[in-house]
Length: 327
Image (cartoon, rainbow, N blue to C red):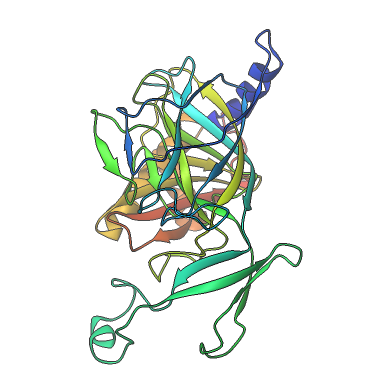
């Protein structure tokens, strides 16, 4: 059985076993700007439990557009997962990620590292502005509110996601919420949407799960330095895989398995993601190094999640159609 399938089975078994799964409604009253073991858990939950909660936007504004937290990326949590120990894998499946107010905001010009330096120095707009977007959940779109932006009425479909999901980092580190790493963090991957299953390596007892930085939509690379930043209503279910070490975050959807690597330069992030995906295929799908290399050479896909954070993030992914078990 593959690790990804095992994760879903464990969630199901824990939910239906002798320990009855619970649904927890958690209303946050404080938020954190570091991913750290030192933060007191806000709630203790069991594998199989469901959490219904809220996040605020990247500048600390809530559903009423009131500032209740500090930038950057204030986090809800941490949630203590009973039974989670270093060397385990925490599994998080997202059931709801939905904007909780009718407006989002974003910057309006390209961020450094996303365009030619000569263009940015000599031709580009030098003044950054914050633009408001009107969210129409009934139509499933967001529209630029300003009448001065050309062309008027730029409109994009909603695709709500979370920029940050993390566990407490290893080695007792406290990492700023602007930063991604092996623990998850500010990965800013626009594929982290409803229906995805995220796997993170546990480094502290209880895992200590953080969520935040909601985006109503984000393009690849997060090239203006942020997304359609908005507060969110969030629901997720947690599970555990005991004594199964992974090196970097892993994701599963109906179509793909994926790994996320974060580093600078971008090439190193790509290397982390590729290595983690190859290890996954070799450990759980019956491939050896040559077999997985051959498959990667002709079927591997990459997404660029972010090129604006302290560490850049690359996603390596492969379609499940290629992963029929080989013995």
